[in-house]
Each structure stands twice: as structure tokens, then as C-alpha cells.
Amino acid sequence: MIGRLQMNAHGFGFVTPEDDDGGGDLYIATPHLCGALHGDLIKAKVISRASGEHKRRGRVMSILEKANRRYVCTLRAEYGMRYAECDDPQLPYFVHPVNAKRFNLKAGRSEERRVG
Image (cartoon, rainbow, N blue to C red):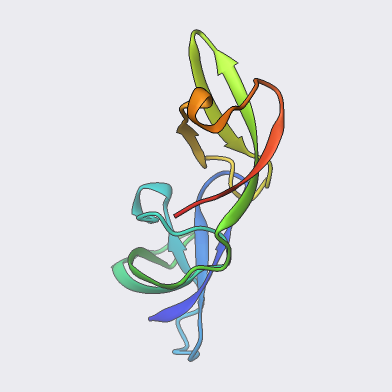
């Protein structure tokens, strides 16, 4: 299935298929995003069909087109570690360690950085 990933503020997403196959949206749990982010065009695979809240669950197989490669992030410093936290609420899990000296960053400042 090919479609655009729509992320939720809780870190999971849904894929709406480009070609309506009658099965509706595909739920993608956080561990199955495989690096895909909100708005990316992805190829996904159905991994289970279940009754209940989410009829179909899937996994991202590949990212066909990145929606965005620049994100505004805030540098945080806690417990001797520095990390960038994305300011977009649809990317709450998008946090990674950074070398603040390399990028000349100071804690608490928002910076726009290229990703990927």
C-alpha cells in the first residue's frame, strides 16, 4: 500500500491509501514507523487484521518521498546531556542527541536544522 503518513501527537500514525482498497486507513504503531515522519509518502505493509479500534495494523516498508527535511527544534540540556526536541507537535518523539559544540548551539534556543 502506498500513501501519506499522518502522525498523531502521541507518536503513532495512520496511512490513507492513495488507491482506496476499501480497507480504510492503516494504523502504524511507533516502533513500526522505521524513520518515517509526518507527511512522508510511504510504502506500508499490512501486518495484522484485528477487530476493535484499529482494523488494520501495518509497518512502514520504505519512504518513497520525504515531506520535509528541515525542522525547527529546541536544544535541551538535562542531566549533562543535550538533545534536540522538535517543536512540531506531530513529531513529539523526534528527539536525538546532538553535539552542541559542533553546531555552536546553546540550551533553550530554537534552531532550524536539516535532517536526513
